[in-house]
Length: 201
Image (cartoon, rainbow, N blue to C red; front, side, top):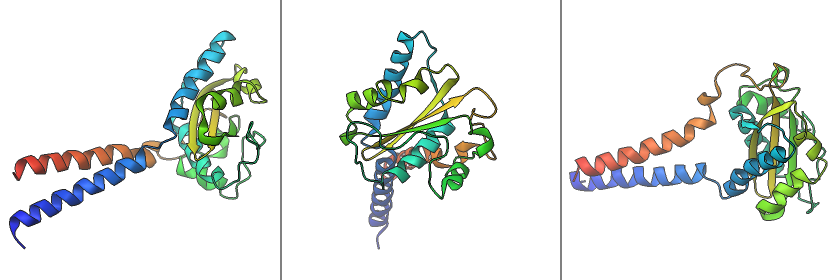
């Protein structure tokens, strides 16, 4: 195998790896997630309530739960077919908390609001939260933080408080040691590809 061939092989392999990695990080339903928080905060502004701020650990839990909910059928196309609560009825719920470095002690005052909306239409998603049973949670001044995750037709809003029992503070290690390192790692691989392409030309 020639050196030139080996160089091309290494660069191509790293390039394909970086493309695959980035595709796993960026989801098609991010549009619904990105537009939902501004919509909720605009709704709260009309009620003279403070805006919800993004909470990384709540976001992590929302993502983990969305992955569980996607396995459930979407039987109610006009709203959520799941009753809101702080502990969804998944046998592995404690494991999901652990993945986000959380525990029940720091999440018990939070609330999980799942909704099933076909194709996650942004307008319908927002109305599912502001014009349904969920509006009472969005109207509640005790909730100050939020995390949003989605998979397939499911989207989840996790609300947090500024209290020790609902602030979603870490239960052990920092959440940055888990899933949120995926993105930077992908871009590091892509930069390595660019560097090697420049050096080996």
